[in-house]
Image 1 (cartoon, each protein chain N blue to C red):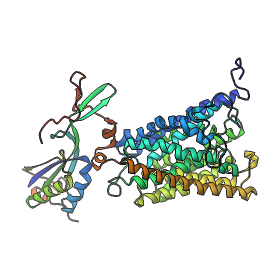
Image 2 (spheres, each protein chain N blue to C red):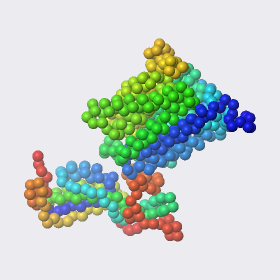
Image 3 (cartoon, each protein chain N blue to C red):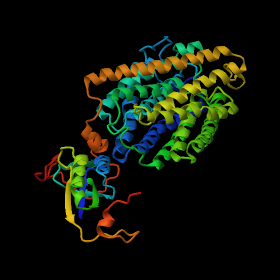
Image 4 (cartoon, rainbow over the protein chains, first blue to last red):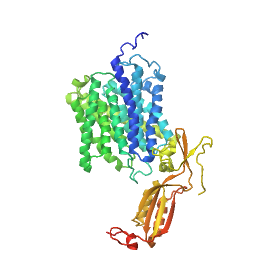
Length: 433
Length: 117
């Protein structure tokens, strides 16, 4: 690199500027998800639910830099990447192959994807999983499952080599989180009150605000996945506006048909579903087809969201429906309606290329199978080494007090200041019962 | 006629309601209260501020019943509210002087008997 120049050769200033912003936008999605999830749980678990998302940032940003990035993006092995980028070896200012942005920035951008994906899975196990066990799970999952799926879909693995189209992460992020969430819910087990009591969202405003911020961040998520300011990024960015809007309209209609009222939490869910639907397809389908995808694609997740609570599976915040099933739908949709005139890469079945549908179907089978299977085994092994879930007593008390020693809505009534001089004595019995 | 006051853990409220309905006790009020009954204090820390939380959230049931319903009501509160840990709550039974049902003006026994439809 020329010491006098600001950039490595082939690095484009405009592309790099946008990707810097897009990376920050994607990172915002994780706290936004925390807010969304926190609103959906009971008040006594607000902080723990939010902290699972914050914990995902803490743990996964590190595992990604240490080893995850290398497994996902070093070389083009069929199943796994290499280890040449472990500890960010050789990840610096030279452009990442196939892009015009520095590899260091590419690494950070992809890292924020890994973070949000891990955070998404927490939705399946909130209100009962032990916080420590969750952090260990997050660290292992980010490497053993996310990095592998990211390699298949983005990093030169077998799916991308075959020609499977996945613009912004239908395979690793959406199907990866959704089907892993199902496995996690099965292994960790249902909350003690599940199916016996109504377990209702405690703050619908958090849910709506969280969904809104997620949508905002998703412009960086999809709009940045072209790694440039080029046509595919502009297309994906615009489709990220249109597709979720169509999903909202469709969700309103479905809510009206089912319950005669348009629900707010339904609308928040629709925003997420719409963004997920367009995630794999963003840079590959026309704006018109993006609207169609948003409307038609709402049906499968809606059906699963209505059906799932009738089962014994306490997949608490419906990650499977909103991410797994919607991601699956989006991946398949590309196989039908991708349009070379818009994406410059490939047509789908509708435009005369049936092979594309085959490649998409393969991804739609392989990703859920690996995500579910690997997560199931990982949690079974982890469960043999440490308890995964809280005691019944802790679950009754609430995760906030048990794991964080704080309450989201502390009133301060009856709170006695403990001065450092007096020393902190935990659990002082104040009277003999 | 007695007023049965039961103070229970918030997380046991659904179980208490269930056993009350099973005992055919149908008229009740409940309110969220904070109290202290000999359980261990929780220590919470907010940045540099550490506090002992002396009060715990509880739910207070108030149930006015006629004589034959007193014991079933107490049994139902115990059955639904008990976990065996300190902090399960208490039941107080106090005499009632008068009861009036506002809608009909019925008094006393007529007023504490559930409406049969």
